[in-house]
Structures are given as C-alpha cells and as structure tokens.
Figure 1 (cartoon, rainbow, N blue to C red):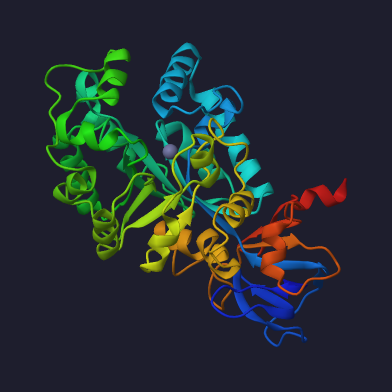
Figure 2: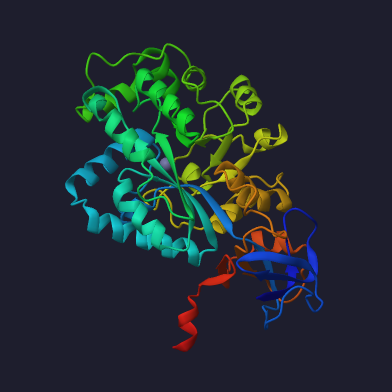
Amino acid sequence: MILRARYVAPVDGPVIDDGFVAAEGGRIVEVGPWKKPRTTTGETLDYGDAVIVPGFVNAHTHLDLSDLGGKVPPGADLIDWLSRLMKLRSAMTVDETTVAEAVRLGVEQSLASGVTTVGDVTSSPDWTRPMLARSYLRSVSYGEVIAIGQRRGLLERRLAAALSRDWAAPRVRVGVSPHSPYTVEPAAMKRCGEEAEKHLASVCVHLLESPHEEEFARLASGPLREYLVGLKVWDERVAAADCDPVELLRRSGLLNSRLLLAHVNYVSDAQIALLGECGVSIAYCPRTHAAFGHPPHRCADMLARGMSVCIGTDSLASNPSLSVLDELRHVRRAHPEISPETLLRMGTLHGAKALGFGEEVGTLSPRRWADMTVVPIEPKSVKDPLAAIFSGKLPPLASYVAGKRVHPAESADAR
Ligand SMILES: [Zn+2]
C-alpha cells in the first residue's frame, strides 16, 4: 500500500515535498520524497494537493455521550451546565442499545474527521467496549469511577468494571478514570491510585476544570458542594482532601507518566511545575474551554516547560464535533504563538504518548502502525503546508488505520 501527496508531514522530521508513505502488514515500511518504493509493491494512490499526517489522536472524549449533540448547550457556568446534563441524562433511557448507538455515532464521526486513536472515558464499559472492539479506532477505554457521598458504595464495583479485561482487544486497552476531586472522595481516590499501580493502568482525571475545585478540595465547601447537594449525592461524611487538587493526586499515588489530566483550566505556576516534573500529560479541550468562557488556557506555558500537551474534544454534549483538526484550527487562532509544527505534535504524537501508544503511532516512521490522515490544501500559494491545513476549513479526504482505509469506507467505492 503506497500513498503519495504533495506533502508528507511525518512529525518526527521536516515536512517532505512530494512525498510518499508505504506500508505492509499494517505497518509503515518507508517514508520519503517520491520514488518507486523498494520495500513494497502495489498501486500508488496519489492524493495530489494534500498533506499526509499521522492519524489524529483525540486524547479526551466521551463517545457514549455522542447522542447529546446540541441538547445541553454550554453556558458561562460549568456547574449549571453539569446540573442540566445530569438532569437530562437521568430523564433519558440509557441502556445497552442507546449507549452502543451513541458510541457507534462517535466512532463514525471520529474516523470521518481523521481521528484514529481516542482516549475515551465511559461510565458503562461493558456497553462501550464491545463497540470499540468492533471498530477500527485505537483506544484507551477509561472506565469512570464516581464515588462520593451517596455514591460512595459504587467504588469497588466501578473500579472492577474499569479494569476488567473482558473486552480488551488488540486495539482497545483498558484504563481507569477517577472522575474528579469533586466526585471521588480522597479515600476513594487513593484506592484508584492503588489499583492503577497494581495494573500499571492508564489513568485519566478531570482536573481544575472549574474555578471552584480548589475550594472544594481544601474545604469540601462552595458551589461544587451545592452541586452535589442539588443532585442529592452529598452527605455529611464527605471529607475535604485538605489540600489542593494536584496534591490530592500526589497523595493518591497518581502523579506519574501514566496520568492524563483533562482540562486543567485553573492552574498555578507551582502546580504546572509539579505536573511537569512528574511527566503528567495534559488534554486541553480547546472549543469546550472556549464555550465555557474560561480564562486563556496555559497550554503555551506548559509546552514551554516541555510538557506533553495534547488535544481532547470532550463530548458532543459540549462541543460541536469530535474533530481534532477543527480543535487545532481553533488553537491556531486562540494561541498564534504556538507554531504549526507544535500544533501537529499536540494533535498526534503528544496524544499517542499520553495514552501509552507513543511507540506505536503518532509519527509516520518505519515500524509504526500505518495510521494516517490525508488533509486537503488549496492547490495554489502554499508555502507552509502545516499553516495551510490549520488555517483551512476542509475536512480530511481519507483516514487509514493499520494501512486500511477506514474513511471513506472501502466498500463505498463499489457504490
Ligand atoms: Zn471529560
């Protein structure tokens, strides 16, 4: 299998003019300026005015909420939005059929937008994972743990479901997501840390998403306490962590390179420094961040410290699409100080590393899986092809996973 285009952006090296990528057995065997490949035979598919990039990595999403598009519009208040989301969710029928359909929709949208790997948080791993296992997406499926107040008793069951290997598949790995410091009590957070360590599992936590999280962690008070009271989840046994949220994770044994933090919208210099030292990855969710009107994200400061900042879309409940390319286009406008090369790394290799796939995908280099996305560019006036794809509007022409075209589906050619 050989793909050719006006540009190839391998991520681990400079952009190649008139380049090609050749794959065999699902893995890349050659990348370079166009010539007849030595190592593989077969027809060359020439995409012309386009850039071949590694498949995009959506490091933070909730595919099982893909049926909520447009139903819970984000506003200026995150807690109000969470309350509306929970209310809607509890009024809906949520069963195996509806979850499977939501995940199917999310998988389809992801592949169509050039995303080939996801970090997917699910509250129902038994229903989500079979759909992921059947799909072409590569994934870490983080089983969500919520264990606080009236939901304290869910801890062990949720942890076991998260780390169950029943549905693990070649492209599906399991992880655990203790949801956040305001939905998982300090003792439960510690249990999650112990189990994650025992299984060497990937972990995802929503952290510092709200300006009120610090107060809640220190004192178990403030608007997040009121939110839990409103949900009838709060009880008097809920204990404060008595420290800031980052310190809570440190005490829980979670601050290491297997940890991915979603959002991190309200973070101090000292917290950034500690997270950086511990090799923690950060999933910045650009359009969700913008929709809630948070202050500017500190992704550029984190990148300057050498931290692995990757891209998440969060769910369709708060975001118009599951396209990492569209997220990067947003970041290009919001953070013009970040170079197009860095943007591409954020959307590919950084996400792959965050999910533990850093040696397998995320760059176009020999021996890695041939996961690729072809992004069209305007035929004329392209001096910087990466700047062109991030200032453009066009969706990808095609997505490939392990050398197989997964969007448009190969069977579409027959129609
Ligand atoms: Zn999330």
